[in-house]
Length: 88
Ligand code: SF4
Ligand code: SF4
Image (cartoon, rainbow, N blue to C red):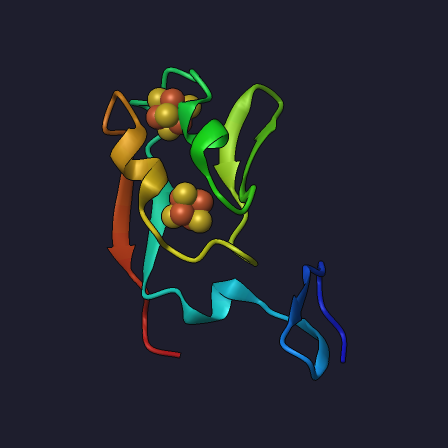
């Protein structure tokens, strides 16, 4: 099996599994860069470290983003929109 990046999570007695949490996402958070004030609150709250700061700009990496919406809920500028994922 080949993965772009790997989170390894131990589960039960049967061993260690790789879980790509992005696979079960039904909604996708998208940052409106025009509204974003680069406060980093979304970055601090994401439970799976899927928000990164690159060249002074916050962006979302979708491999492990599970679409929980915490980032959108916590954003003080309402700069993160949750869009429905297209059917795969
Ligand atoms: S919480 Fe909102 S305003 Fe702050 S960095 Fe994230 S998207 Fe931008
Ligand atoms: S939706 Fe959840 S997992 Fe995805 S970036 Fe926002 S806080 Fe992180």
